[in-house]
Length: 251
View 1: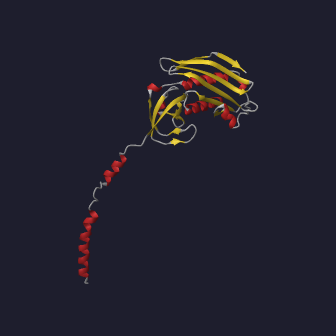
View 2: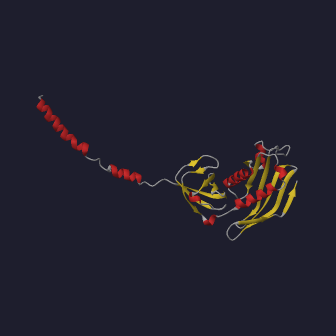
């Protein structure tokens, strides 16, 4: 084949292939449009519904949600009193420490109808137990908090126990007397907790507006302090007011 004929065949082949290489694929979109679509895609977010268990002066909130306990500061230092229920929107992950921490919080909305500061009520009860007959918790490393027979959720109980331990510089433990015995903290044979003290609150009757309960601090069979026939009621704002104590006992 002559060089001229070879060139003619190659040129014809090039003309045949050129349209297939340059024509856009069916259904495709221009690169600039595709990039714009990606940049305009909505940012993924998630929402945590949680109750404020405590709020400190710096604006840091201790929160109890369905799946855990969290500590966070909201945008612009927003703060809310204990008992407030919040829907917190965030676009980051969750920092796996304890309490956990939400990343990149965007906003917080209040669920007005769900305010319930029973955590604050029971913090006051635990504080009264702790401040009375302080010899019972002398030389202890642990504070046991048993709120299993109250209306608080599991994570509200955990958050309250953690906060109480933090305030009093004790390692907090949650669980009943039986649980703490089974885990080796309390000596059930000697009826004594050598390096800890157990605080318990038990509701005996509860409604939307009124609760009756008993409470105790226990170190051993001959070392305990009791509050009996306690009553608290909610005021018009939905907050639990102060409580009254029907009787006191010491063993």
